Structures are given as structure tokens and as C-alpha cells.
Picture 1 (cartoon, rainbow, N blue to C red):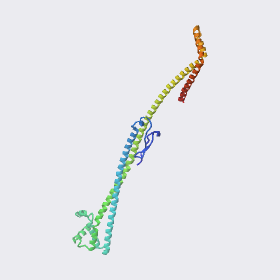
Picture 2 (cartoon, rainbow, N blue to C red):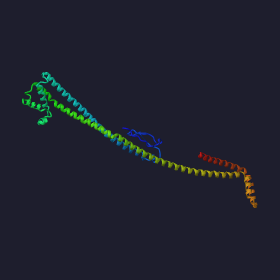
Picture 3 (tube, rainbow, N blue to C red):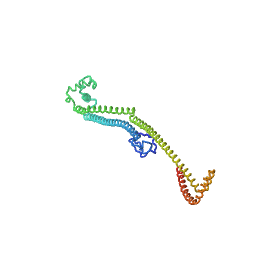
Picture 4 (cartoon, rainbow, N blue to C red):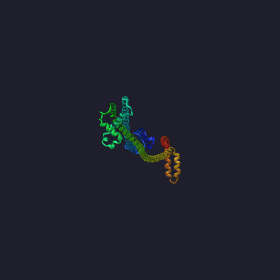
Amino acid sequence: MSSINFFTGVNPAFSNVQKADVFGRKQRSFDSGPASILNGTFDPIAQKRQTAQKRAYKIVSDAYAGDKKIDDDVQNRRGLIEHYERMYGEANQRLKEIEEGKEALRQEYNIDPDSQEQKDLEILEKYQNVPDWAKADEKTMELWMTPEELDRAKELHEQGYGEGYTEYQQRVLELDKGVAPQKEKLKDALKGLIEENGAIRGIALERLKYHHMVDAQLEADDIMEKASDEIKGILMDEAVDHVDEKFEEEIEESEEKKEEQKEEEEKLEEIKERREELEALMDPEKAQEEHRHSDDGPDTILGDGMTEAMLKMDSVKEDVKQQVADMVTKMKLVAEDVKGIKVDELL
């Protein structure tokens, strides 16, 4: 019985241990792959494959069982043929032994084959071997003996069966009683041989017409091929869903990264502004000059106030510079960290 092969269309990346089914096919067991097929407890691919395999197995096994039954019947008939052959051979052998015994008696009594005694014996043998049901009808008797032979047989019987016969004739007729049963065996054996050989030839011809196993195998292959096509469709649908889900996840991750990038840029801008403010505090002359250019006008009182404030600031300038320098150093480190994070993410 040929194997039934089919391809599920599954990428090897989604397969692990392979097992063989009743037809010798290798089937994949999935533990990773697209969407719900491998994440849930229900596996439509496994169910569809198992259903198809059961149908294919039943078709092939039924055909095999039918063929096995026929094979057993043929085997039994071959056994009967052997029996009838033995039966035919044994009957033939017994008839041969009877003929040899009769010939031995003829030679023992030195009987001439053309003598009247021998001719009468042959007529008596014929009459003795006619079935009893045929002796009741003269028309039927003519199928076994000629009218002349029948008249002579009746005449010999009128003389007294067994009493008017010679010793030679009596001994031969006694041996001849075993001929009819052996001929009946030959007839039965020949009939049995003809019937059984004819039956076997008929079975062989029927098998040539219908090809039960071949048809079953083709049907099973068709079932598995259709199941394979359906499994491919399921896997394609699941793969598309899986790609869609991955694409949506990537879009969401991209949006999140954009938001994070925006927040980081805002933090960098804020740090930049803060840094500029600190640098201005560290250089009051520059700040005063910038303020003077921006505030030139008739308000001299405001200018005097600023001058006084700047003079006071000179007294604490060195302390402020040191503190501001420390803060700037720390801010620079923060800014560089943020930039580093940004660069890493871009990489």
C-alpha cells in the first residue's frame, strides 16, 4: 500500500518534533508561529489534518479489508484445488491398480484376449458398471451398451449371476466393483477443479476492472491534498493577521518614540535656556551692557538703581561665579546625558 504524502505549507521555523502517522507520513507539531493557531488551546490545523487522515485511513483500510477478504477467499479456493488434485490423482492411481490386477489375473489364467470368455467378461463388466437407475429404462441403457451387448448380458445373467461364470470372470468382476467409486471420485474432483479455477480467474478479471486499492489510494491522496490546500489557506490568513498586528505595533512604537523625542527636545531647549541664564549671571558686565542698550531712555532713576545693583553685585561676584560654575558643570552633565540617550535611541 503506497503512502499518502501531503505538504501543509508551514514554514520550518514554525515546526519542531516530527511524528509519523499510520500511513508513514511525517506531520509537524507547532509551538510557535502566527496568531491564534499557536497561542490558543484549539488548533484548527491539527484538527483538519486529523479529520482528513481519519477519512483517508478509513477509505484505504476498508479497501484493504475488502481485498484481504478476497485474498483469503482465493487462498481457500487454492486449498480446495490442491485437495481435488490429490483426489483426482488418488482415484487415477486406484483405477490403474485395478487394471493392473485384472491384467495379472488374465495372465495367471492364461486367457486369450480374443477368447469368448474374455469377451463375455468385458460385457459383464460394462453391465456391472451401469448405474441402477439406468438399468430400469432400455432407452437409457442404450447410452451405456449396444443392443447386442445388452442381450448377451441378460443371457449370461439368466444362466445365473456368479454361478455360471468362470473363476477368472468372478475374480475380475470382484476387482471391477472398485471402478465405479473411483470414477465417481474422478468426476467430483474434475468438477471441483473446473469450478475453483474458474472462480479464481473470475476474481482476477474483476480486480483488473476495478482496482479497489488503487482507487482507494487515489481517493485518500485527494482528501489529503484538499486538506493541505485548506491548511495553507488557514496559515495564510493567520500570517496576514500576524503581519497586520506587527505593523500596528510598529506604528504605535514609532508614535511613542516621536513623543519621547519631542519631550527630549523640549528638555534640551529648557536646559539650553537655563544655561544661557546662568552664563549671563556669570558675566554681569555683559548683561549690564545688554541691559543698557535695551533700556536707554529718559528714566535716569532706573539707570541709577541698576548701577547701584551692579556695584553691590561686584562684592559677591566671586562667590556667585563659583556657585554658578558648579551649577553649569552639573547642567552640562545633564545635557550631555540627555543627548547621549537621544543618540543611542537613534542608533
